[in-house]
Image (cartoon, rainbow, N blue to C red; front, top):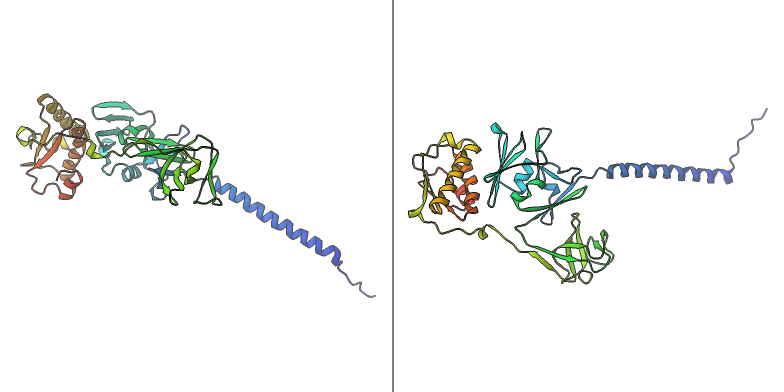
Length: 338
């Protein structure tokens, strides 16, 4: 008996194969779309400091809680805000200084000492995987900064630095680059304020930043005239009297010793006594005499770092004598003491 030869109906087969291929492609694209959506939902929060995105320079990711409080690791706070930030591990205190402020945060009870005042932090220091996170939003007055947070970004603006703004004249878009066909970064409503960064394309465009931390370009004709909110201010703005070594308060080995230099509380007592003497005696120069002083270098440096902001606060100054290479030239320069 002859076997019946199976014959493919090309008219029916080709459309079915085509349909099957289309379905497979759609399924693959759909799967990729889901994966992409799931991945994109995990967004790394970004940190903008004075109109510069420093997210990739951070040692650890920032954390923004449900109340829009910005948390940064202690290491990153040191790198970004205060190079002299110090963790006194034996007493669980984070010590930070800037401008006219010297502060110590007690990690265990969330008490913060700022100059001569003590306050309770509303938001605790966090410890995640043995990393200390500081609620930067709450200590903004120490660093003299403004912190603006959204779900996935934090914008930090120094109150020491100039700030200029513009406002949208109509509903506009911030572009990735100058030019009409450039990609849109964010849509802006009429009247919305933007931080001005710089002129671009022969002043036809402005480089700007939104308070959500998006940086891009807008046409100059679409925004208002620039408005200066504040000007630059640096350490030179903290004026002090001329040093007067003949009419000075002198600190010697009698008050500078291992016992009262070894921790923040002991150093703070010497600082407070010095400030009181300056005010009562009206002697605005502090003469730090290192003759016969036998204290570890690191404690002497900490004392000076914590003393200088308090002296700035009252317009006083510090002069180091008989150093005899106890403190390095590099450190003295960093403190503007030589």
